Length: 194
Picture 1 (tube, one colour):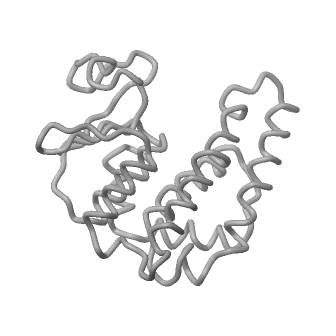
Picture 2: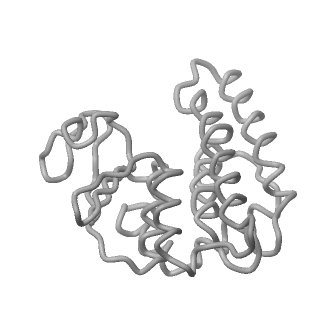
């Protein structure tokens, strides 16, 4: 199995999930400016969408898009699943919100034309992230152990650090708990993230 990633991109969530799951995989860096892989391949030939993550399974099947990759990893790993009749639905609900609202809200911050535009985008991110902070059920989104949604949220919290956003205290705690996890440390080290 091979994960195509770019450092500190949203694919870090998938990298963490694979390590938390204890799955055997290779990780190959993609330069999203040139669309070349670390091995010199044209990433557009691997994934015509030209986005990470792209996960190639052992049988050659490719899964793209964070929500799909994270759902597949959780489906293969009982320890990453949330129990109860609505467990998977709640995780997909959180993943969808993170993808369609929070992740998207960062785009103006990466490409802001002015400090005012960046500040407005930062305010939007903080407004959108607040319901997740308010809804924490213990140490993580769904209780005492992290789900794949927590891994994706963690990446959004790292991005908040990059843009010096003033996160709510409960999310600062979640971020620090995530940073202390061996799988998170290993994924960040492998991607060269300090």
